[in-house]
Amino acid sequence: MKVFGDIASGNCYKVKLTLEQLGIAHEWAHVNIVQGETRTENFLCLNPNGKIPVLVLDSGEALSESNAILNYLAAGTPLLPAGRLERARVLEWQFFEQYSHEPYIAVARFINKYLGMPEARRAEYEAKQAGGRKALGVMERQLALTPFLAGDRYTIADISLYAYTHVAHEGGFDLADFPAVGAWLARVRSQPGHVTMEKFLQLNEGIGGN
Image 1 (spheres, one colour):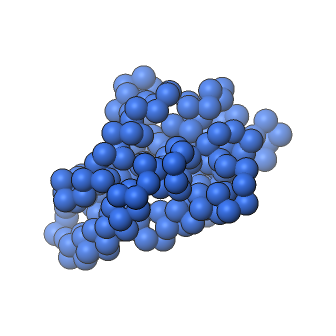
Image 2 (cartoon, helix red, strand yellow; image 1 turned 90 degrees about the vertical axis):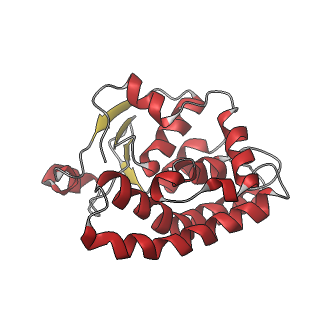
């Protein structure tokens, strides 16, 4: 397998973390969004939407959208329950991540950390704060009841939400206000095979970016 992505992106990091925790051999190809590498003709042949990550299978077929990739990789493993309702609970949280969490927390992080808070986007950054805190509040309520998001076991739902939540402070979100989320972050970090984003960047020289 070959993955095109940028580990400093939460959506790409979640794929890298899943691959590592499942022990799946793969090649990682760094893609620099800022330099326009997702808009080249070759890349658009892999994903016409021009976004990372993209997983290329041994057959040559390409799969995009981070959570779709996680579901493909985790099928038949403990990270994705086999039960109909349990699997739907995982998907429920993954849809929440893409629609109610990532658009606020990830975007605020990008504006602050990678763009250096340009004045032209300050209002957008500030507008993301309420939505991000609302998403963290939803997680807080669930994690006060169960150790992991989809219930009692660690799944790709946790990987999906961990990716941007653990760096939410880089987008201006104070996680001290969400103690159950903080305790969950520690539980995720304690899972076998867990590797931090920073460690991946250190181990893969030249894979940093935006």
